Image 1 (cartoon, rainbow, N blue to C red):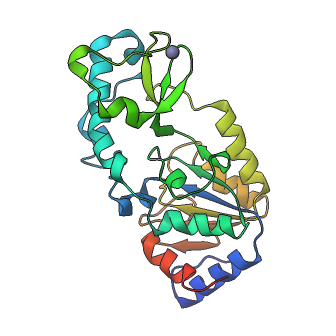
Image 2 (cartoon, rainbow, N blue to C red):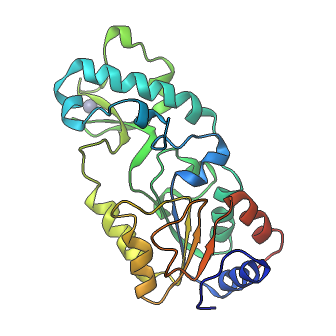
Length: 257
Ligand SMILES: [Zn+2]
């Protein structure tokens, strides 16, 4: 099983066997898992972060006009995110959890679709935060995004915390803001202790994303890459499927493992 497969019948059968033999599976997901839920890859060409210069965290704090600009973009994204539903890729991880095989799910996505699939919050590591929540930067209170975004009126300025008057911000990591140490530690621990890591829809080109499958592999886990594009991990992964996750999920879940 320890050789690299491109997709063929043999590859998928052995992937099923690897799932069957694993007890500590960790998922790692990027934008590619959510495109089938209608959420565009904002970083890709033509995406919102390609068309617009991002508002840096420091600018958000210091400049009211930048804050409004930031909220305008969030409003645009919110229309997609509010109604998006988990797809068969998200449900694949939920089914592994139901079989008591999934011990953690690390994601670069901020769409909250793993939460919507029914995975418990405490096994999800949202490396870039979560767009379904709003946080007060002063008192730290976290509220559902729906409550604030549904009646956001930017004519009146950027929204403020009802409790303390502090600046509200979607609970995501902005450009110029560091990832949370707690999340990095958890992702690292999961990479160290899993026996199978399934990477879906991440190009693995940025740190720290690229290091997690590598850590898992070095510690004896099998690594599976499911991505439409090549990744730097393809060379050492045990399974490489350059396919849509939906197709793979269908092949895997049509039969109980
Ligand atoms: Zn507050």
